[in-house]
Image (cartoon, rainbow, N blue to C red; front, top):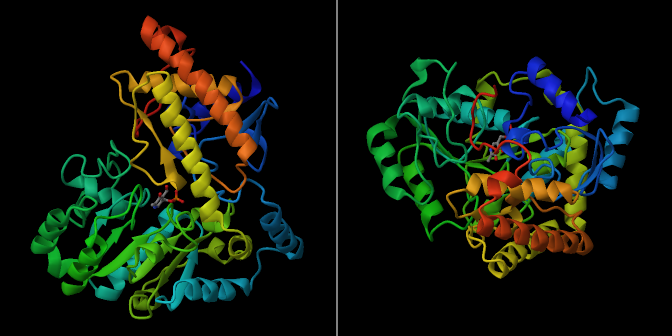
Length: 438
Ligand SMILES: Cc1ncc(COP(=O)(O)O)c(C=O)c1O
């Protein structure tokens, strides 16, 4: 067993679940083969502990590193701040500048608070909305983190969050008393939202949702949600943690033409350095004055300095246009090579290129996606059935990936014809959703 695999093997006995983030778990991709650890990363390239080199055609830091790993401009700004000291008894003045810049980009917003992660920023946004409205219930559409307020959805129907990004989330450890405080509705489903409002409208503090994830909303849907939320006295929160800065410069809601009362950002805002932001109208943010929302490391400097450097760079380079182009090319490869080799490929027309994905529409889809990842690893690519494109993906790298897709699809097609897929797998089949790691 090489260094990378043996460290992960040991980690599983020391760190429950093996990793700190479910979607970075090797068992979700190619068990026993996917390299859990890196020693160095740059652009879209990464080296594992055994100095094996890969191009990251997968998540690029689960969407955090939209400019690429170790972006030189962001790194320089962060290093400068570290050299001057990055944590003080006093505050980083840069946080005021960041608040100003975020409110300039989103002219409807007047105030900002900063956290460090996406999930905690969503939790803060919900707390603010509850404090502002003095109400307790939230209507939810999409994925918003691991915290109690969110998992409380699954205290009702057994798996209400199924279809909201992550199935199988058991609310173990979440107080049963929270039952009924978080209720889900599906994207574009006005009737489901109406049912929540009819039964709990007078207790509704907020509707929190991703403004979009895979495609534009049906015409009028976001406007409808906003109008219904406001009519019953609730606030509208847009969770831009993943889609923000990808679809356009700023929140995707700018492109979709609907302003919320509160918006949440994280991930790409720091390009790999922890920073989360909650911005809102003065009225909506009232609860941020009255509720206790406070943490030591929300006052360090690296996150805010990184965010300012990211936004500076994004003003100079059209990052959303680049990631759209990269995503479009990869989608075309999956589609055309899939057709060429007669593989059952689906989903390519059902996503934004900036969050491109496909699926094997086949009874053995999990085996096929595991094999895809295995064969890509053998060719030096970290790859799965989705890609978060970055500014660091050059035409040359994408062309290399395209040639690999051609070869790998040919091998998978041959395996399907000869019925040898299971035999081709060098490790167990990957799992999706959440489950205990044995
Ligand atoms: C839309 C959305 N909200 C919140 C989160 C949670 O963010 P974090 O993992 O930084 O806590 C994610 C993470 O994937 C997300 O996609």
